[in-house]
Image (cartoon, rainbow over all chains, first blue to last red; front, side, top):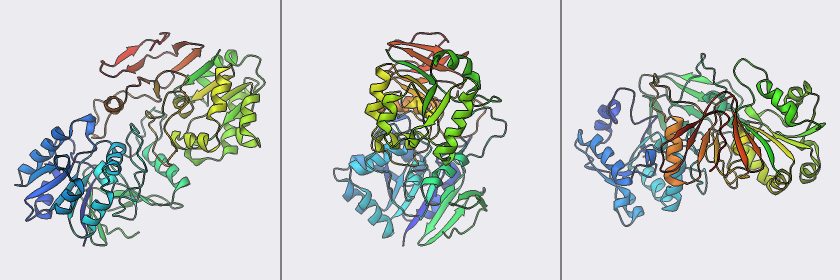
Amino acid sequence: MKKLIIASTSTVHNSGYLEYILPRLTSFFEGVKTILFIPYARPGGISYDAYTAIASKGFETIGIQVSGIHEYNDAQEAIANAEGIFTGGGNTFELVNQLYKNNILESLSKAVLTGTLYLGTSAGSNICGVTMMNTNDMPIVYPPSFTTLGFIPFNINAHYLDPDPTSKHMGETRETRIKEYHVFNNTPVLGLREGSWLEVMGDTITLKGNLSARLFQPGKEAKELDSESVINL
Amino acid sequence: MKKLIIASTSTVHNSGYLEYILPRLTSFFEGVKTILFIPYARPGGISYDAYTAIASKGFETIGIQVSGIHEYNDAQEAIANAEGIFTGGGNTFELVNQLYKNNILESLSKAVLTGTLYLGTSAGSNICGVTMMNTNDMPIVYPPSFTTLGFIPFNINAHYLDPDPTSKHMGETRETRIKEYHVFNNTPVLGLREGSWLEVMGDTITLKGNLSARLFQPGKEAKELDSESVINL
């Protein structure tokens, strides 16, 4: 049975890395000694080593060790042997690019579908959707495809932001962009606000955290889902 | 000699479509009776006809007719015969996708390099850069390539936004995103604020409008260029 935590962000305002979600991670990863970290999204172009050190420090407080996938000669084997997997945030284009380049999409899919615990934050959550087409990131590299892992039957818009009615900026709001997406695509999109996450237990997907999330479906009005909603799409 | 106006936006806050730049467009397009409009970026998924009607209305006040490229059987011929070309804003991924699908990059390049007047706003300006890799748009379609027309030797970040020091949002600032781009790429990037535009006259590129623009180069501190600066890169 697949078991995933798909979080909008690693960090909420005025809080440490993963701090807001650590209580839940403690129970989610109960019994796990080591987590395999996928640092490919490398925020700000940080090195894989430096990013893995940040993830290690985050998990240290709950007694879990972290190793970076780049430390292994065989990335597919590392995934197959992992007790748990964590894909961190950063640039989704580069993350997806590296997933394809390292040829690990199939391994990841197989591991997660057979029960390896998975945590994603931000870009690491975007790749749990059907495609990465609702990322907010800048297309700084050209990946071979926008198709991602499809652990959930919809796409994620991480760091979802409500329109600012006081803004004088003429760039599109997040809602406008997602609606534009639905002119060209039919996959539903969930706008996950910072501090929200999804828990996927087999086929049951539940919204967690204190906030509501905004669901966009083609041809329908966007709607707010309350925390603890079970999402059936 | 190439002659382009590359504008950050079509519309500034509290102003009509193209209104802020119409005085300059009047002189730029002097003697031109009809402009060929490329509506492929179709903001919000608007139809080509509806978008062309908006462009027509914008140019009506300065006595110039507008025809949409989709109205012609042969898009390449339409470009070759155009007195002036205007590519409007919207989604840069879809715009670039359609430029490739309709096989008009070469025609556009040839026309502009031999002196056909070109106006771009937002997405229509992004494509004047070397690549579209500094767009702010959502990747709602997968184009065959991110390579664009390269009329200028750098990329454009349209609708450039300064960081908001009061924000509690954990998503990346525009500056962070562009710096991340330079971990992977060497092409300089110009952040063009709304109301700014570039005038390209042959090899001379001048910043116009009331605002400064922010220049990002790999391995260098970002710097502000004053209005009327000539940009040599």
